[in-house]
Structures are given as C-alpha cells and as structure tokens.
Amino acid sequence: MSTENEPYTKMSLEETKQTKLWAAIQKKLKERERASNVKFFLGILNRLADERQRPSLDDRAVNELAPYYAKAKDKEKQSEQDKLNVAAKRVAYNRALDDGAVAYVGFKQAVPLGSPGAEFNDVEFIGGLWRVQKKFPYKITQVRDRQFVLVKKLPRAEKNKFEYYTAAAAIWSGTGCSADVAKPDWIVAKYETPNGVFMSYGQTIEQARAFLAISIYDEYQDLIHNAALAEANQK
Image 1 (cartoon, helix red, strand yellow):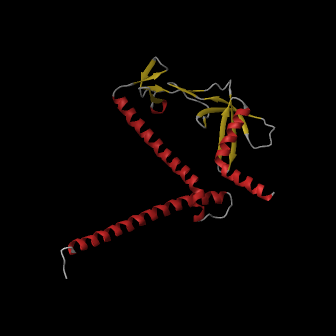
Image 2: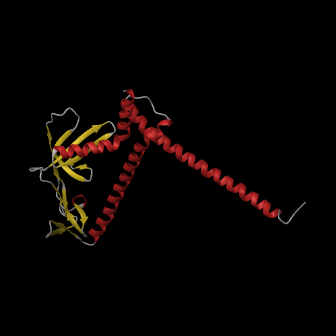
Image 3: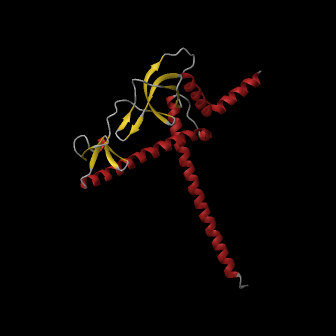
C-alpha cells in the first residue's frame, strides 16, 4: 500500500546507498594510499637493511620507519624546489638579457649581463640587482643553523668516536661567500652513525661537544631511556 511518505523513503534509501558507496570508495583510496606509503617505507628501510646485512623488515616496522620516510620526502621536495629555483632564475635572467641589464662586480663596477664572467652561472639576483658572485674554493658544511668551512681535523685523546675540527664561519654578502680560513675561530664536533651524521659547533671543544651530546640525546632519548631501565631491572 502506497503512502505519501514512500517517495521520500525511497529517496532516502537511494541517498544512503550512494553515501555508503562513496564512503567505501574513499576508504579504498585511503587504504591504497596507506599501502603505497608502507611500500615506500619498507623500500627505504629494506635497502638500509641490505646495506647492514640485516633481515628484511615487515609491516610491523612501519612506525619505526616513519623518520626515514619523512627525510626521504623532504629530500624529494628540496630537489624539486631546487629545480624550480633554477628554472625561475633562467626566466628572470633571459628577460634581463633582453632588457640589456647589467651585473655588478662588487658595489660600484657594472658590466653587461651575459658578458664573460657575468653569465648565468656567475651571477645571482640579490637585493634587486644582478651581482657577480666570487668563486668560493672551499667546501661549505651546514652545521645546524650555520654554515662553516672545516679547516683542520684536530687530534683527540678521548675514547668516544667524536671528531673535532677547527672551522671558519661562511659569510655571505652581495659578492658571494667568504671565510677567514687563515684564522678559524670555531670548533665543530662531528659524530657519524649508520643513521646519519650529527654535528654541532661552539667556540671551544667543550661547547661543541656539549651541544653535540644534546643533539644525540634528542635523537636517541627513547633508546637511552629503555637501555637505562633494562639495566636497572637487572640489578
């Protein structure tokens, strides 16, 4: 027997059916996305496991692999950003060439952009002007929030695996990078592990070592805590 509410009931059932179907599709897509992420996790860590001659890892290790996944994605994003930066520079450089722009050597001398010594790889757009960048012959090392040139490895008498270097701060200006390698006034401490390299700096070995120890603790505090508990439980 038909009632006036029947059309509404049928529509509600149909809407419910479509809603459930949509929800099922979304769930399936999310499952695929998660499966893809898991596959990505395991791909990275299995390669690491192969390098260290450890058995292959399974899905239970996913939570432990998250940091590696994040680092890999950050590296991928940075690579893409670098490509975009170069492409953007190329567009701006070509437009500047068409406009007959100049490039500054130092703060006063100007030469035609695109002339020898002021070509694409020689210049950067800084402070609203194209500037010729001095060739910097030293390797620049990023240490936390600063850049340094590591000058000399220091001998050490400690039993730990820390390394110490005299270092000169890398200073950027409109003409490029400079560092007083003849008078390095910083110390950089370095500790290398299978999972990465930890580095810190200070004005003395003691300062650099202390900051390095803090960095290592921040990374491995759970492991250190668990080891300490295990040792305490054995007593």
